[in-house]
Image 1 (cartoon, rainbow over the protein chains, first blue to last red):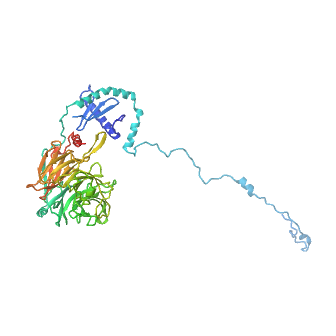
Image 2 (image 1 turned 120 degrees about the vertical axis):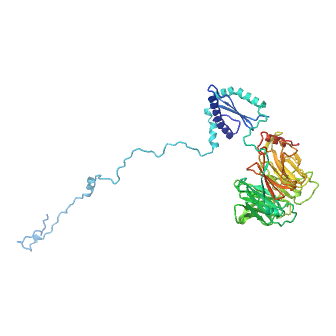
Image 3 (image 1 turned 60 degrees about the vertical axis):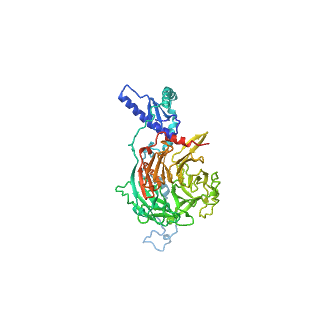
Length: 70
Length: 532
């Protein structure tokens, strides 16, 4: 994916955009394969250090990275 | 024809007749010149020497071109991506954002309040539950001479462990020879009582340090004040460089030797040595296997920044014996030294003030001390700067939190922040001396300390801030543990050497090697308990 707007630095943004685009496509294919009537609405990846949230769309992808408090 | 007067001779005439020889002029004979007219009339193009050149447009030298690859770096090529905003349709982008906005904000809020993942941790690797002693290494010949392990060091690759034998309690005179032994722990058929390499050293080796990138170089500091660098790949004579005994050499035993990265990028590492004669010297390699002085610092009591604890002692120009040194991980010019007087000093290698000491030196010595921390109840034997640091915002100012540990003969470990003189935390870990303290390279809240009772204490601030998380009994019968080092490559290994001449390699359990999710935050909290 080509970054359009970002609040992070360039190199990190490009990394996230490329990797998450591929992962989102794979997630979408998985959902539709399991049930062709279904489709992906939202993707959340939780890691040790933070949570990545992806809102997909036909043309765009919104990626938000949050540090959950606990 | 010519009608010569006497041309025609007739035989019947009288030769003496004058009509035969009459003067006459003959008109000149005219020959018309042909060359000029011939030239113009007879000239015709018969043939040319150069053949006729027939030309036709059949090929052009410049071919069609196509961009195959760009030589410039990724970053330069990526910038156009941002500038290609012509491809973005802002209205559709706006409608997309409006569509997803609610959903994303809802998720963000849910996440922030969620307890779903509290205490949930995934174990990706096999968990190692216990701490065990992997190897017990020794050199019997050194043990027979009652030599102690004075220092251990791991190689750059993490597979070779070197230890130095000497004596730490020998007093002022020591003419005993000592040994430097190395074992390759990854080798099959490792014999714990037979080191792979043994180097005989004429004087007692007090400290060792492997080169940070060349796995075969080890530097050692001797009781005589000299420094030697050995190359373990050489079979005949492993000595590569030495300082020898010159005016520049330390006059007291060298207690710590470290490799410092070269000032400029790509420059070789230099050796730094610390001794109780108060000098901190940086050496560079010279031809002929000599080490020459490149830079030097001297810690003089008069030039140590005054604080309320030091007013009592006025040693004037007396040298302050330096026993240990640790470089800060975030500013390569800042280092912390521990001194015999019991306090630690924050120093800078960029200091310019000349040292007011009576010591002669080929390179001018400078006074590096900038800040004094509150003292221990006895000499400091070891300092260690935390490899983890963070920028915190305090009162609108961004500070780099840098913590370090110091331990000494009072059996206490002090956790200091470089921003204030009093320690953040003081822990009494031993009734005897504490000889060495080291931060864990992977867990920001863990450190290890070697005690005079023969224990290796592993402390974890996350579990408890008063007592050690784990105490390993290194040697039976209260023989002190003098040195310990974490393996930076295989972070579950910890090597410790004791007075019985034995080096033990401990394998730590997973909770000492895996960083928890909130550790950095906890460390920050610890560091920010700074009294204003």
